[in-house]
Structures are given as structure tokens and as C-alpha cells.
Image 1 (cartoon, rainbow, N blue to C red):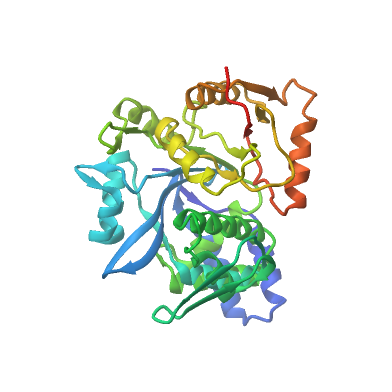
Image 2 (tube, rainbow, N blue to C red):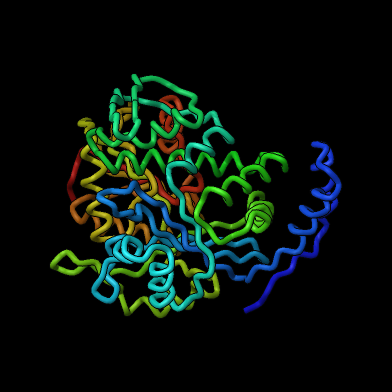
Length: 401
């Protein structure tokens, strides 16, 4: 596997910034030498685990992802491995619960045929720290969030409104799970906060970046050293291409989720080369409830439908009332790639066979004023699209074909 040794003019930049903070000379030289001599494989495969709370002496994985990084070309491919995916008769979540990172890494490596040499395990402490280091983060609370648990030292008390939250308050915001959608709402809030962290990390100075990397190394379970973390942040925080790949799965009639062996070989080949074809790329879709009736159950119902039929879910849902309603169903397809456009069209036919969609494609259609009306209405209600979005799919009032 090709090794990458860094030979570019970052040393002088690092030195100049650190000198501003009067770091002793020997520490400065050490930091510069360590960062500029990092040796990492390319492509690099990282197992990312979101660790849930310890329940009945068992630690569960809330999220399992593979991040494939091409350091030379600045490419990142993310693929989500379902926690309930069966492998050798056991669910993926079982491997982490029983054997931690080593057992889960071995299972992922055997399944995908790639070396999983590095890992990151993120828990609630990380959210709290990053909330202080990168915050305050603005959030919008639409319904009361109140919960008290003395055993967990948890006191959550938010009334509807706009808040700018730092560490402890931000942690309370993402931990709340007593709403109508329970864990689904919690996962949505976690994603919302993580995206804000990713935006903020682009603009921090070198001292803050070093502080964050040092904290993560000391407090987060990982086999990266601090200088490797700093190096990766420097290489990828400005310019990189991010794509999402669909992990090949198949849902059986008995409800078990298994690997789709027919697609696995192609998927592994593409993951090794980081050249994900349009067939395996996950379209980034915002799903909107365009009916007059607005209810939270819109999200879990549609999420279950997409998981079963499409094998993935939209990146965001909008069920709330933002002052717009739609008579029929509309798909605003904003990607310029015809392959993804065709994939979205065929998917919607499978997902909603009784709906007659109006398809508007930005590559040709100039009449997308309604799309911009939607974006403006969302912004007024403090709902922002996580760009890039491939399509905005609106399920309107009428179901007929």
C-alpha cells in the first residue's frame, strides 16, 4: 500500500502561527517536525463509531461508519454500516458490544476486504468539549424539552425559542429523547450539531486546532496520534470532495437485514479505489411534507419506507408548517449529473407508485421559482438546507396517477 510522506511548505506556516503564541522553541520544533513527518497510508480506511450510553453494563454502537480517505487527491467517501446488518449470524452491533473496537474492526475488514487500521470512537464527552471549543451553536427549539434524571445528572429544560448553546447546554440538547420521535429526534439533533462542528473547524486558528487535537487524543478512543489528527484536519478542512456510498444490503421477508452479495463485489472494488459509481452513490435528498396536515409521524413512516425500498434514507426531513402547501407531488432535482437524475426518478416511482410527480431539473428547467420559494420559507423558519442537495422531494396533497 502506497505510503504518503508530507513534503510541502506547511512547516513555515505552522511555525509562524505558533510563534504568535510564544511557544518555547523546542516545542515549536517538535510540533513542526512531527506534523511534517506524518506517514499515513493512502487510501486510508477509518472506522468511525458513535458510542451510546452504557446500559445494563453493555456499551452499544449508535453509529457505525467507514470513512475512506484519499489523502493525495483530497477525496472522502463515507458509507454507513447498518447496526442490524447480519454478518456470520450476528448483528454488527453485537461485535462492538461483545469485543469492542478490535472485534468490530475485524468483522468490517473481513466483510469488505479492506484494512481497517484506524478508528475513532466518539461519545457524549466529545460533544460537550467541542461545544465549548467551537460554540456557541445556534439551535431552534420548537416544542418544550423538559427532562430530569438525578442518576444521570441530567437536567434538560428548554422552552420554544432560539438558543446559542455551548458545551453542557449543547450536550443536554442532543441527549434529550423524550419527545414524540424519541431516538429519531435525538439522532437528527446530533447530525445537526455535527454538521455545525464541521463548518466551524474550517476557520479555527492553528493553536485552537492543536488544542482540539490534543484533547481528542487524550479523551477519545482512537489509535491516531495528535499530530496525525492535526495533519488530516489541515489536509481536508479546506478543499476536499465528499461523497456517500450505499452499503449493499437486502431486506428479507422475515425482517432480517443481510449483505447483498450480488452488489458486494462491485462495492468493495469501488471502495478500494474510492471511485464510487453513480449506481452506488447515495443521492442527498430533502423530503418535505407538502400536505396541509402536519405531524411528526411523517418522518418515521417515510424513513421506514425508504429503508425498506431504497436501502437508504433522505438526509433531512421537513414535516413542520413553513407556510407552504402543495396540491401535487414535486421533485426539484438540483444535481447536474444525468445518472443521479435518472436514479432519483426511478427510485421515486418505486417508492410512490400511486403518485404522479412533476419533475423539475435545474440542468434544463428555468421554471424553478417554487424551489426558491421553499428555500426562502425554510430560511425564515430557521430551517437551512445542508448543501449540496441532489433533490428536494415534496409529497403533496393529492395521490393519484
